Length: 102
Image (cartoon, rainbow, N blue to C red):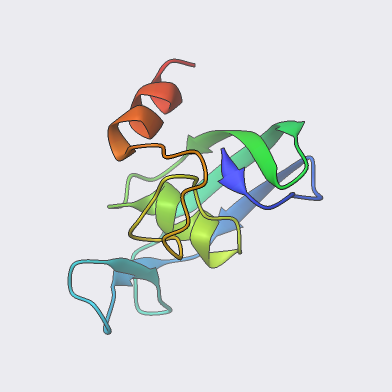
């Protein structure tokens, strides 16, 4: 589940990822990074959120979180790559559990 309504039904994000130069604990899209490819498909749109299915071709650290945040649709409950808003009080472990049950 990401914050915001994605207009496309499906898309591919092909942007390299490297360690952030602003925060060493984070990763970021960077032209000097390693190749990273993420595919996503919209499963359901809500008023302010979109439920998506994600498949990755590469396995970069925090890849899904970095890519979705970079294009403006941060994962709900992600305190690191979002702006900290968590309207559903979702914990990071809940997000992971939901994600891996597909």
